[in-house]
Image (tube, rainbow, N blue to C red):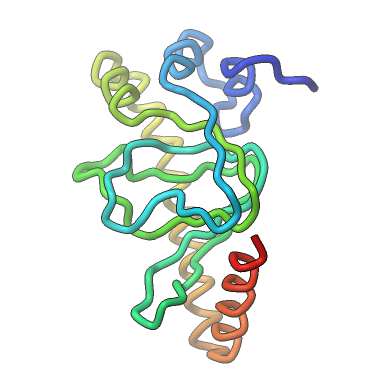
Length: 171
């Protein structure tokens, strides 16, 4: 299926499955295309959550910063995934870092624009909140699995950090 414009892309994205057409038009007004080079930071822990992203191509690592330099990867996202739920909940700060592991294209949805539309239409806000609750639960589960793996097999953590660092250096 060929996607012709932003509204068409949103309409066919699984995250927005079943969303009312009038909401798709509202969301499109908050959307724009962005690109990230391999190794580029998408956002940093503590930074203001100004967007959320629908990944079109590429790969992004979610990492907790580590004093030794290599972040601890808690999840890896690919094309079709949703990145960032912190735009929805005050104080609108990122809880981790996100870094492109490969050239990545995404659709960025502006948080201020979205919050305004959600305030104006509580039904839209409720719908988006439900959808993002599922994303948050999925991320918590991924972090739980990653931490379980790290503590069950500490050598795997060093190996994964080397692979992640190598992917960033290959750019």
